[in-house]
Length: 482
Image 1 (cartoon, rainbow, N blue to C red):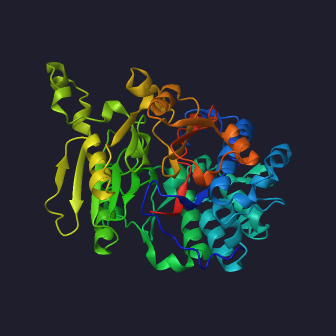
Image 2 (tube, rainbow, N blue to C red; image 1 turned 45 degrees about the vertical axis):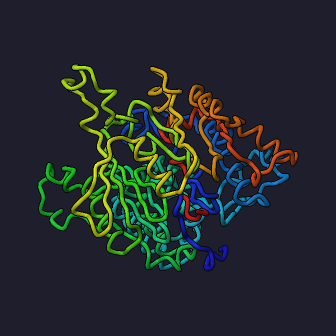
């Protein structure tokens, strides 16, 4: 097991140079999703696993390695691509890249399962929620640690029989946890399909040496203390339901956290997190962004993400809902689906929680963050999904045009299929380059990750985009520069 004891955990920015993150490569369970269960498992469609891996997600991993841990990949791209076994990408197999900067959750899970005590506890927990037989629990306890990690994630035992449902959403690592300065917030996914993910995450964060020095800084969100006494319809209420996913949490400045209230994150959970973080003095300002509870939006990071301290990408139709100049016509006020009524921004400051202020619109909020929290003196820029052209704004937002991961200031990864959004970046002076071409340039030495600025890296996305999550969703940063 790599030594992680001296590795810090700290994130206080959305765009500072990324130093370490958690990911999970698409596993064999994702290839077993069937149409009748796809929506139960939060997929809109079934995907072709081999295409998703080899032609799409593997580029994501190689890019991350080149930026964060280049010695693991430099000079090896052709060799890696010609390896039919894909051992380079699979924890526990010969040839695995085994980085302590680009870290697959399955690797960490396999490593904690080497401890017999942890293995016994986790196997009992998983078999309990999955209602397996005691004999199966005993049998799993004899498995190789990395094979058992694969079983817990994919649901498949030696690829011969299905023991549990797969966890296809685990590729969206951000939803299980968020680092807020030097604290780790363990999230509570809204859907039952992700319950097993939360148990795996708990064991990893509490038992793996990578997080040993941060153990006292792990935050778990408490359930409503009356939860067990509530009727089912009351439990489902946004005022009682305690669910929060990482796509609704953004660390926009060292003292400022943003929380989205969406179809996946409840007002109750947001309130609990706010109280805990203020009490622990982790942050001094929390902005709650309430968005419509629609599958189109899901999380706030499907509506906007930060590209640079002075640049944001966002969905234009939700950008200025509080701007009276755009709400002049009579029909707007009497529309039965007045989106403005479902979209609100409320900001709280520690010590003044009883006197929050309302911010009119998203552009004003993002401008305020850039100028007041991050000290930007240049004009704040907005780049709109689909270049703000109807119907392309909504079409491309659906395929994650706003869901971008910043590798460093101004260098982001996004999906190649969002043509008009990409063109909007080009018009703002960004270099557009495909992941494959950029890796070739890195191998030739004609470009370097350290000197890259204002660049949009396009990731192949025919299958990935069908999973309803972008590069921001597929990452859990655990160390960033400011």
